[in-house]
Length: 389
Length: 229
Image 1 (cartoon, chains in turn red, purple):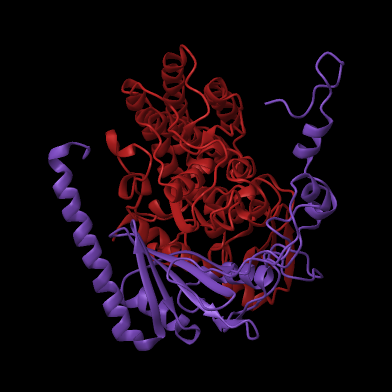
Image 2 (cartoon, one colour):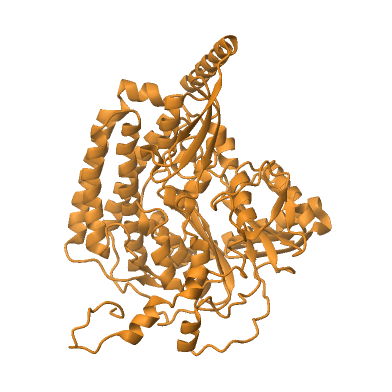
């Protein structure tokens, strides 16, 4: 029997024992409202949990506090204007939001970005991932009561944000990707500075590993908590590190690269067999390290050449349907773009990762203890803008 | 690393075998679903299958349990009616500035794998072990907007169907509880339908256009906002 199975069984046994006790002393149910304002929700998610003693009988997330109707708004904006909206979906990794939409439009127009643009796109894509997940690594420790790591996270994320700002002009909302390439070339000295930032991020990962991962309290609070079996996770549409932590070896960067150059460098997809909160934390930690390696290798070999393909000034996208999905920091993000040959998209369906990742919570939170709600939500890692769109 | 010329024939071979795999998949689906599979289409790695509404749940069952498409990607709908508010939902001011003549709305055209009705269901599932994926479509008659639910097969469809219900007004038979997901409970209307006006846009001119019109002459000491690129 593996460690995981033992943990799962002991957890189930503990729950069963508690349920018996509850039956004997006839506890009365109560409803607990978590949020909409709660540090674990990364925005405004409300969870209505029905409790029996310390255990959750049923939990129902309530969202829409931040629904901005991007799918409707995108129908009255030109293709270049849509990127301004979709920057605000996952606001911690904004550049990564732009990429699949631009790729879908390029696909309909049958335009391909020049190699240099693809390369820089991939670098910025990975920098978004690092900026995004760095915050998770610090934040996850806060959910179990350790305050220090989050300050480290904010400190070191700044190095990455500085690089994104130096290249694009925006710390959070770059709006830098264009149909056919990128807005600008990289500034002088950027490559060397980014390498330095990557070194700092690797140091940060080591620090988090020493501070948090081996910590006894952290292990006790996350190991065996919130276990997601792979097939259930898949049927709920879980993606990204959440599903890789359940042992599913699936990463779109490796398995279906489109328009990005992840296949040109040497890197590894990390998985963890346990599927618990700890595994999700661990996979994200390894992914951040791996992303710094991807960036380092890409920086070594940026091809020269133009950064924009030839595209018309007024972008009219030929009629058709395209769907492009990429492996974003939070999971699989895709845009289903329907065009009727106009300057406006006819319909844009946004497949955001967090929406599906959070949809498993009613199943996952059943039977857990109240403090575990917070660690489970923290380990699923969602951004409210990515749920509500 | 497959950009060299010598490997190009190999890439063609991969494409050909991928096409065959798609054809085989469609053939297997046709055996199961029969005439309910209306049309299929494939383009650049994307595969569309369009089924009759009654076979919508059977399709999910078949894809999930027989074909191994275990990953539920998304479920939504498309309203194929051209917007009755003209080319876009601009306010009257914008239409004057753009010299847009009010006219008859364009004819309804549908996209990949065709379509016969205004509303069309749209869903996508993946097979994570082989990287295959299928986009499923189904036509819905306008006077009876309902479809079988995918929740028994893919539990993740729950929230997606709630979203399609409130945004398009599509009922899902067998769904455990169609409640509002994003919108407040007393909200009326279905915002993603094309005939639902985007009011903020209708009553207020598009700021960019107005700024261009009102931009001060250089040297006049304007506030400098708007129009600058």
